[in-house]
Amino acid sequence: MLSKMKMSNSGDLYIPASPDYMAKARFDGIVYPDTEKTLAYLVPAIGVQKGNPRNIQSIDDLTKEDITIGICDPENCVIGEYAVEVFEKNNIITKIKQNIVTHTPSASKTAALISLRKVDAIIIWRVMGNWNPANMDIVQINQDQIPRIAHVSGAVSTYTKDKDTAKEFLEFLASPEGQSIFSKRGYLPTEIGAKKYAPNAIVGGEYQLPEEWYNI
Image (cartoon, rainbow, N blue to C red; front, side, top):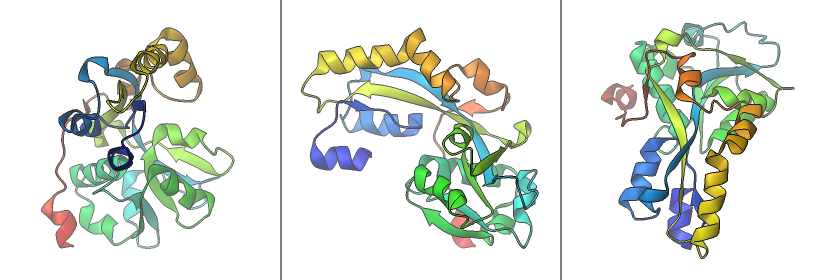
């Protein structure tokens, strides 16, 4: 999304799923830093087919030989990066990588893998279980196994042709009314709420994919 905004020189707001990408947007001069607002928090989770037919109960179950996994490309997708960090923290990169059968270019396409029954499990944001509840169940990752959670932030783009209106809409999203809409859709509008699922996790921050990920 950030690359497309750069190429088209368009967009009123930039709302990424991680502070890492907002930092890139600030560095590239694509957003007005003084307009940035935190809108919601995201926690990694396991997505499985409805009814959980493979009985996946934990991140460790994903290392079993007969389980197929899909993740978002960690070099270009926020949740893919967070997935690898979960694997690294729990010392399962070597075991789990052999079960990863596909990398997708976006979080929505990762979620579609479950709807289309292409894989047994995916790593996505917890909230994405609300996108297609008829086809997907969410398995929580043990709270001590999650090293980092993300927050969704928004800022007015420097490409906007109507900065005042864009800023007004962003302020609505961050208002109690806007936050209630996020909450109804399964997002976690507060850090306290997100920390219930990962009390020891840090919020945001940079992460470098480990050499182990490339060497296997």
